[in-house]
Length: 232
Image 1 (cartoon, one colour):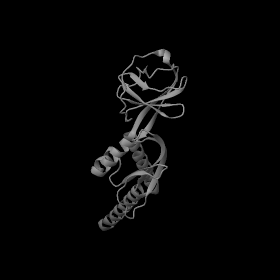
Image 2 (cartoon, one colour; image 1 turned 180 degrees about the vertical axis):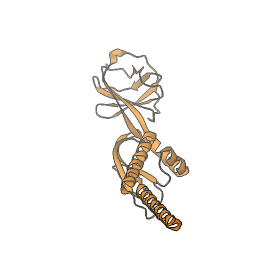
Image 3 (tube, one colour; image 1 turned 135 degrees about the vertical axis):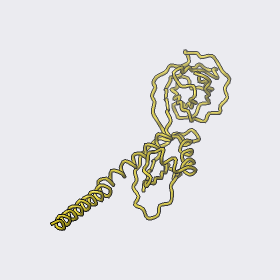
Image 4 (cartoon, one colour; image 1 turned 120 degrees about the vertical axis):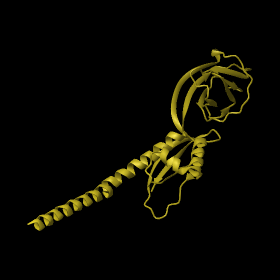
């Protein structure tokens, strides 16, 4: 009788262990969980890259009213952060010599009378123009519009590439990526130029995502590009 009871107990225990093993396999290897891991890892990687390479861009347009003989003017932008640099173009997109000191932007002519100009502010603009300061004269200009957006900075993409190559485990941790997930990225420009960081992929299945972005290049041009993100 006792032997029969022990036999039943062994059968029940074996069944419980079998069910536990099946549950473990379904939980950790189910296609649904794997798909969720891939989607979340791609999103974390893409968000981490964008967050660490994005800068703010503030854009003003202004109408000039400059008489002949005026060689330089100043415009006050008290609401623009002091750490932002400036780039100015005329209505034909031609660069106007400009510099920023405090809240004032100084422009050097020649000017085209009643032309519209675009004044852009960004922390990563590289501006080396030197213009002698003049007094702000609001009769020389009228602010027409203002707008702001976020763009990718080539300078910061290059810094991220350096961080990727120097301390990849730290970057993975910073982006909240699981230990078994690897990632890489590239920023592809229309002229076939690209910035790429990617570890060796040896036989793993690769998943990717991409996003069209605006990029501030090192020469101060703002261009369109495609950000590619991979995980494996």
